[in-house]
Each structure stands twice: as structure tokens, then as C-alpha cells.
Image (cartoon, rainbow, N blue to C red; front, side):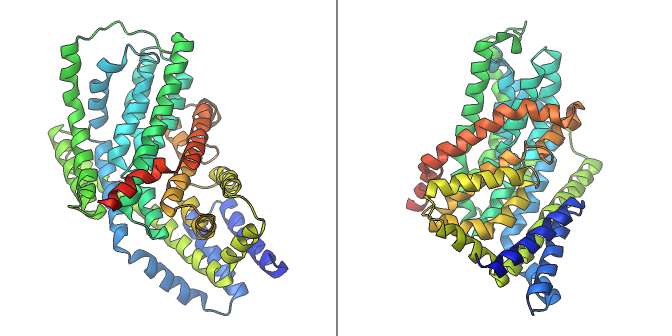
Length: 436
């Protein structure tokens, strides 16, 4: 990289970290950096470019799916669906090694398939399971760690908010991205469950035996409480894969289904509906502020030639494709300690995606790789969102919760390595969808 380009890059990234370090909101920090970069190093009018960049970003119809999925998650959070999941799964899990610790894994897997959000998945499931597990005498550390890790499945298992953002920015099909997340999500969930069972066999004291017993008839009857979750999964994902609805239309169906179940559970009134709408507006505004800020910064960096220069410099190092992915993985782990998942995706994509595609990787596969790395950021201090959610539920210090989540951090890295060595895990279903 030339000296002039290197100094320009240092100024841009230096201003960014100064703004973030000063506690300025991520979205505003991105606008500030873009404005400074364009003003100092370009003769183009920064204000006009900012306005046109914001409009070019928010005019995309696909972004309408975001507030709809967020609203669905808000309604589900208050609908009592997690209590029903708990009642349905207890009779089937209580005798397995690890016992009801598996509840965190399976509940998060199922709830992720209807919520689209990591934080919502963690909060909704944790609100029920952590209190129950503590009451039954389960090991506190593995209960918190498994919830922190499994909660990240909200990003990987479709419908995922961060998948929608990635698909729009990378210009790939949202439907194919959703398909690509299914098998890696099941794989990660299976690895988590295997770890819990292994710990339960090695140390049965972490999961005390329940006194209650359940007959096979009681177990079968309990499955009816899975119906709301399974129906919502069918409504949202089934309508997309069957080709009868776009992701945006499927999100609207999900909102309708979640609202119906909330009324049936008597968990909906005017005040709850108002709280759901306000929560959805706040979350969507936060995400879109980051997206439009990153869109402007990406345009500025494109004008200045920074992504092309970085790509050329790394390409010139003659790294093998797998060495490149290891290097990117290390960068993402560091960024995960500093930024939230949406910021990581929208800030790094203009630089990382061209390099990865040039190295021969599929952009849909890279989306799954990137989301797995973003999941890692959800449980790394000091800004791991899932850690804050669990802190809010338990009152424990962030450092202690992060220590409990450490085994699941390594399990996520293991899963990332597996899908890197065997990319067909992510690409098989999207290719099947294309073949049809």
C-alpha cells in the first residue's frame, strides 16, 4: 500500500476509534468519520454525498422486512411462547445427561427460528430457564454459559435480521441466505448439545435428578405446547421456501401469527401492543442508523480507494485461501470485543467481500462465516450483547458471565472451522433451491 494511502487509512480508522472511544453512538461515529474523510481527502461536497448515500441506502424495499421481523420478536417476547416451550420439553429432557440444561439449547434453537434476533432469543428463553434451573439446583455457570452461547443462534438460524442486512449489502438472495443458515445452525446447536451431554456424563452433579416422573402419554400430550412455535416457523420460513411469499411478506405473516398466539395466550392488550411497537421502532432505528452511517462511510472509502488498496495489499501477500480466512477470523474476534454485530457486518463488508470472492469463496458461504464470527462477538466483553442480557436477568458481573460462556466461544470457533473446511454444509440447501 502506498504511503499516501496508508496515512489516509490511518486517519480514517483513527478518527473512527476516537469517536467510538468517546462514547459516541456507532451510527453517528460512522457519519463523522465519513464526513471528515471526504472533507480532508476529497474535493467532493460531503453534505450532498451524505444525503444521497442515506437515500440510496434506505430506499431499498428489502429493508421493510427488518421492522416486521423485529415487531414479531417483540410480540413473541411478551406472548408466553417460551413458557409453553418449557412445558413441552421438560418431560423429554429431564432424564438425559445434562438434563434440563439442554432446555437452553433446544429452546433457543426453536425460538431463533421465529425471532430473528440474538438478544431477543437470549432474553425470552433466559427469562424462564435461568430461574427454573436455579430453583432445581443446576450448575449456575454452565446454565449461564449455555444460554449465552445458544442465544447467538438467533443470528444464524433464519429468519435472521443480520442475514437480511448482509444479503442486501452483498446483493445476494435473502431466501438463499436463509436456506444457507439452516444446516450450520443445526450443526452448532448439535455441538452445543453434545458438549452439555458430555459434561453431564463426566459430572452428573451439574444436573440434579428431578423427583417428578412423566409417562409416555404425558410426554406426547406435552408436545401440543410446541404447536405455536412450529406453526410460526411454517408460516414464515415455509412461505418463503415454497415461493408463495417474499421475506417481507413472510415477516408480515409472522407478525399476524405472533399476534394471534399472544391473544390466545391472553398476553395482548393495548398497553402491550404499544410497548411492542415502541420497542420495534427503537430497535429498527438503532439498526438503520448504523446501516445508513456505514453506507455513507463505505461510499467515502470507495471514493478514496481504501477498500481497493487494502484488498490489493492483502492479495499481494499471496496468502492461501484458508490463511486468509484465519486472518480475517482473528480480525473479527478483535472487532467483536469493540463493536456490535451489525456494525461489524456493514463496516467490514466493502473490504472483506471482494477479497473473499477473489480467493474463490462463495458470497453466500461467506455470509454464514461472517455471521458465525458476529455470533462470537455476542459473548465477548466488553460489548457482548448476550452478556448484558444475562446480566440483566441475573445481576452477575459481566466478567463472570463471560468466563462461563468461554467454552461456547471455542465451540463457535470450532463450528466456523468445520464450515470453512466443508462449505457444502452452508451451500447445499441454497443450491438445492436453485436447482428447483
